[in-house]
Length: 115
Image (cartoon, rainbow, N blue to C red; front, side, top):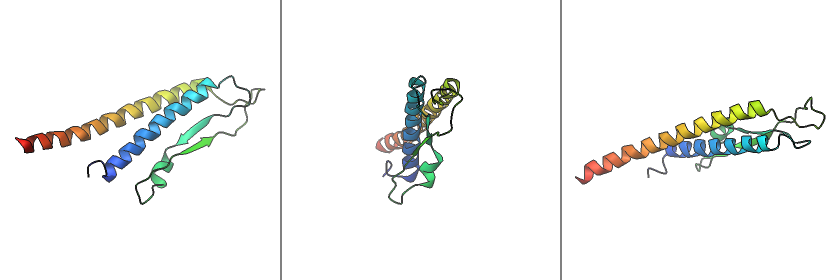
């Protein structure tokens, strides 16, 4: 019941999206020297807008098709990617702390009821 609640489903979707964001930014950073590589990002807003009635959430990966001033066609900005990676890391940790806090509340209630 607890794990099936709407709030836990949203938190789970947020944790998953933040994790994916980190992975995409790491991928972008690792491909900074790959000719023709286009930066990718995760559109988090789509997670909530695209929510299915069954509780399944979907995030969309978007490729930045804008051209680059670089001759090789790569459009990755390593400074921007590093900043976005840190932002996703902070969001991920905040959401993990929120999930932990929610579970602690239920643990406290269950422990009080058993005494």
